[in-house]
Length: 182
Image (cartoon, rainbow, N blue to C red):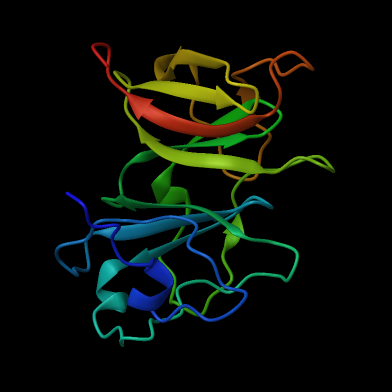
């Protein structure tokens, strides 16, 4: 109980300029389980977890992106899930994961959500008709939203309004899938 723990940078051999943006618990590396990743600029990518089977101690490249972009979310999916992409301006796009084909680790990805200038993706979650999502703003406000209110659209669209941002609430900084009794 008195231990301070170990610095993640030393455990994972993270180089200068790199940072941990998301953590995913993974037990098996299979062809039918996927890592679904999304960047701030709205680019998404789906890779079979078997592609990460031979990772070295120094790591293995999972995503290539432009210099002004960054990884926002990485989640495990079944290949048939519905995905909700939420932007910092409060728009949410629900689309079927099968609209994104599986890719190799070196692929850049495809457009997941169309974003106006100055907007970026805040988070990505998997959803069902029974799911609820908790949208969290930069100034501490939150809103629980029924995912059933969102129709599934094709990828590359703007989505629907999920949260009204203002000077009082701030931008959306995160989204979490929750249950009714959470």
